[in-house]
Amino acid sequence: MVFVMKVYVTFDMEGCSGIAYRAQIRPYPEMPEVYKRAQRFATEDVKAAVEGILEVDPDAEIWFNDGHVDNMNVLFEELPENVVAVVGSGESMDEVMDLDDSFDALVSIGAHGNTLTADAVLCHVWGVREVKFNGRSLSETGLNASLAGFYGVPLVAMSGDEASMKAIQKELSQKIATAVVKRGIGMYSAICIHPKKAQRRIKEAVIDGLRRRHETPLVTYRNPITVEITYKDQYGAYATKLFNSNDEKVAATKIRFVAENAKEAYKQFFARYKLSIARKNLRR
Image 1 (cartoon, rainbow, N blue to C red):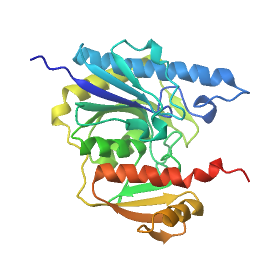
Image 2 (image 1 turned 180 degrees about the horizontal axis):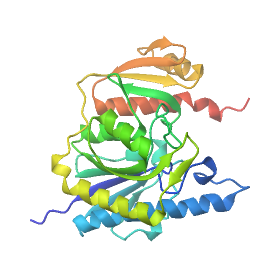
Image 3 (image 1 turned 180 degrees about the vertical axis):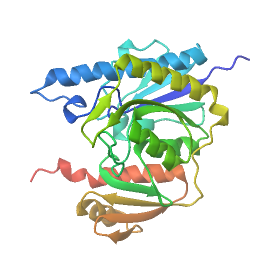
């Protein structure tokens, strides 16, 4: 029986090469060419990751999830035909929708640090200020790795800015194969290496990570998991407590709840985050 590797590639735009400010990561009518050019940077970064996977296993099954904003940033049609896309994941499990124990590895392209990471380019954790699992402050990549770890899937490689790469490795207590493509200066500026050089680094990191995947520890937690969410304003904590009576409101902007395991912690975090932004749909 021939073994075929199955790899999940999750993507976010903030950590891609050549990107440092908001007009690059979503369409702005007054600056349309800025976003289109950034799409090219992002697409080439993902292509480099796919090339790395195929160098390790030319027959690999590759799933690609464009988890940034409305999920249509990378030019998917330019990827090889053996890549399948997860589209519309923002409606539910976001960057790792449909990830399960059938995968051999997780790769994160365009990763960024959490809100509290100094000099992390365009840093944030979805729409909250901070989220913790058992006291560990997590990034979006850390949350994704937590769900992957539940399924026995290791995070083997990632790309992004220097501060974010260091912070994510520290939060996960792991030395993950990384491709540093820029150095942040504050949140909205960066010193970027040439995209071609960045793409070589990404390909090399993916190859290295996949070849060492059996040595890479899983991101796991002691169960049950205490989840703490600090929102950007009081509405998030208020709405969460209102509709989840067992949650503990520990401060004006902070709630705490207990989840059975990492899968439930991830899902329940997302449910509460979605609830906290529901007011955006209200017309006042």
